Amino acid sequence: MEIVKYPAFFTPVEDEIQVDFPDLPEAFTQGKTMDEAMEFAKLGLAITINDKLGHFEEAPQPSNISTLQAKDPQKIIKMVTVDLDQY
Image 1 (cartoon, rainbow, N blue to C red):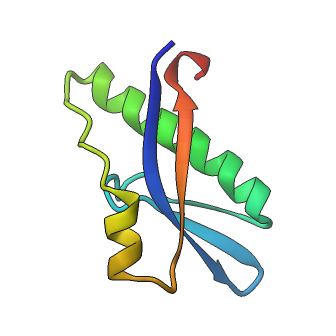
Image 2 (image 1 turned 45 degrees about the horizontal axis):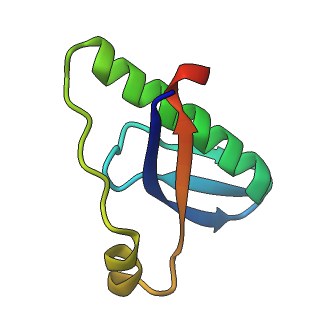
Image 3 (image 1 turned 60 degrees about the horizontal axis):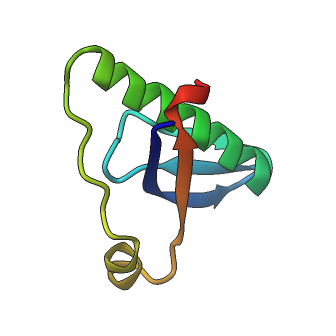
């Protein structure tokens, strides 16, 4: 079991919620609901980290969620956690 955790910004826009990872800009996604956005965020995070590791790249250190929240208190920031072995 290899668990990774990264903070993500969840931004409601029109009829969807966009998800962006400050440490992994290539792992963006979206969903119609918060639950769907979180599920797609988990998938995107797992794919991005597995791709980096598969190419012998180091995964970046995750940002501190408290630091991100302090910089931009109006943003919705959630920690996305996945077990890489499940993907």
